[in-house]
Image (cartoon, rainbow, N blue to C red):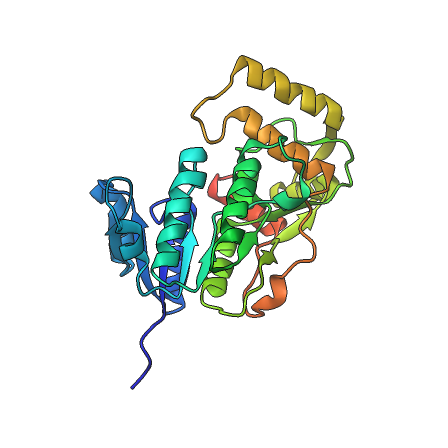
Length: 306
């Protein structure tokens, strides 16, 4: 008789990354408990049930719901995303539920550049992760954070780095500063492996590709077949000034990713202190990593560009 599959609980399972993690876990043969908020729209639950995940509701006003949702899991993976009410309050409730349920391991919703190397107060979303880290490290549970740098998908329009019409790659500071990028699918695949691996250390760092603005220009040139060049948008000090102005003019209260938050992330990347080193890409040798050049070529094809 074959052994029963390992159960992994995933919170934030209806989100983009959360659903990808559930999908990756199911590919690995894991049983998945998808933890969702009470009253979640049925349309958002359809992809989870189609994958064979067991959907469980947990949240405020339901005493014991987090503990019940975590029961029987070998690891709880948090893909909760938001501001303090989510990253601190809801994730703390999830953590406490996991501890009470006797879950041995917890993977928090970090999925970022190495925030431990950044200065407190300089990046709101990283500060939230730093605050939760203190609670997690004080809890009686084995913790593993997966750090992955910027999602590569942001290069396809949302991040103001590759400008296709003037064919320029923007940078601040130095054009040879190395930046880390990882696709969401690669991050999910690695996280699924880590969730099923009881020997993981406290920190795991991955990057599908690490390259400079000059390298980005070369990658865009290869993907599009037309020459891209770098363009210095200013120094890191000028980027900091832009962030302060943007926060004053458009504070973005309640928004998880207002424009200035993305600018904070870019500044931290171009500073270089938050580089992901050493990388743990080879921990699971059969995983294959998407390079930026491949991603940009696929994106160009999807958009009908040569």
